[in-house]
Image (tube, rainbow, N blue to C red):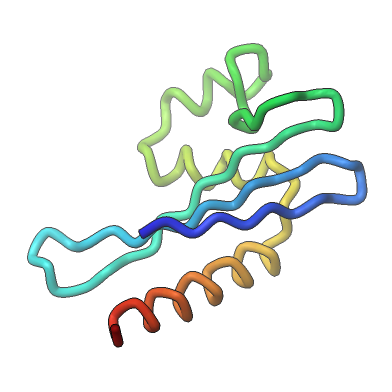
Length: 100
């Protein structure tokens, strides 16, 4: 299950925060993976915060996937409070889905 929430920052940039439940290898628990995409006011589509023309792109390519994901979140401009809010909402929806 994936949950998406879009935040519009003061700069006019829209940041899409996506939370996805990932099942552990032994199927015992679900961890939450968070990814972000952004869209500036002049853009038509959402894109990753760090692309090939970004000065930190080389660093992104040398990191493991989890650290690369954290760097993308950091450069998106979204606040931790907004990330936590998205995760809480995902948890509530996931809990409701399990009950049904």
